[in-house]
Structure formats: C-alpha cells, structure tokens
Image (tube, rainbow, N blue to C red; front, top):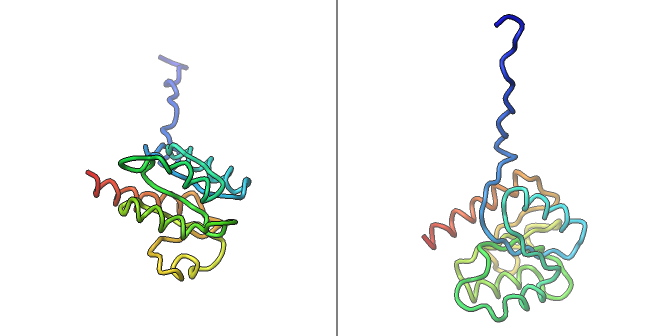
Length: 147
C-alpha cells in the first residue's frame, strides 16, 4: 500500500534493564542515602530486599529463624556503629556456612581481609555492573551448592 509505513514495534529491552535475579537479599547499610540508591539498583535487577540499618538489627531479625537462612545472599557495609560487617558475616557463616556474603566499603581491602575473612569486597562507590557481577558470582555458587 502506497504511503503506509510498517507498524512500529517497541524496542526490545536492553540486558541491563531486565530483571536478572529472583532471590532474597539481606542488605545491611547504616547510611540512608547509600541504602536508598543501592536498594533501587537491587530492586531493578529483581532481588527481594530485606534492608536493615545495623548488624544488630540483622541478627535480631534472624534470631528465631530455623532451618535454612531466610535469604539467599547478604550484602553488608563493613564499617558501621556496633558490630562490623565482617563480624556479622562471620556470625552468619558460623550458622550457615554456605551463605554468600559480600562486603561493601569505601575504605581499603584490609577491612575485608585483615580479620582473616575470605569475603569479596565491593568498593564504594560501585557501578550497577560491578554489583551485578558480584551477585552473579555468589548466587551461582550458592545455587550450585543447594541444587
């Protein structure tokens, strides 16, 4: 037909706009601004987020959990008032040895490794891509352990 154009289709979503995970994540961050920005990224990639603002609050939330952990992965700030993210990670891993924990800090690597902790450290500020890569490594590992 002369003068008619082909119907336009919506462009397919880019890989970065697609939901990439379907898991529950415990997110421990005491800075509300950082927590808000990171929570948006986590939600955008499909994670169900349980956000708490301290390690103590995280431990209180899971105190009565029986069986497997109520989340598949933990993302925690290292430097917080009270219990540090490294100490939280160690306590969680004593209870659930296969639970993946990613530490987040704006400080040096020695915070994650200085305590003898074998945790990955994601440096602030981090990109969405770096966050996704880290989550993918750890979620793949935890899914292969439990599958």
